[in-house]
Image (cartoon, rainbow, N blue to C red; front, top):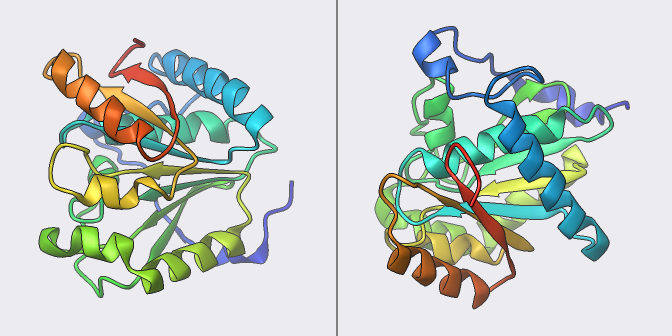
Length: 220
């Protein structure tokens, strides 16, 4: 599969060499963590493909590891399909946790500026910074959405994964929700409680279909 020329303009972002940072990243087909994310990928595609859904969101109740780890590892799982171009967009723009997982500091440049990174030949990461107080308004801004859509169109992805801000920490999660065609809720089994999970399910279903739940480091 030949990638569009726009992929060649992306900056390569190597995975961290530090073992602590590397340990939660399921970046190889034989990685001990990969099986659960591969199962999620296959079940997600089984549900999404007949409906023509290609933009899936991943969210969580509160800020933490469950959401970004699920989003990043699901992106690596999708990219193990050699004929599939995958874009992961970190829309938790106030925190930018996926850059943090990869050992890089959040960028503090122009909040309208998009950064594009290449993690694999068929996997790209898009990030954009914004202060916490401007996160929701940035995500709702027509100009921001237009620029993001233009960048995505240049990369011609087969699958776009959107890491959404947490649903119960402010309103940024709701502001970004309608960018996804369906949503997976990542559940932190160590801290999320049933009433919070039900509240998240209601908020998601009010805007777009809930594709399912994924228990951090397992399934639910």
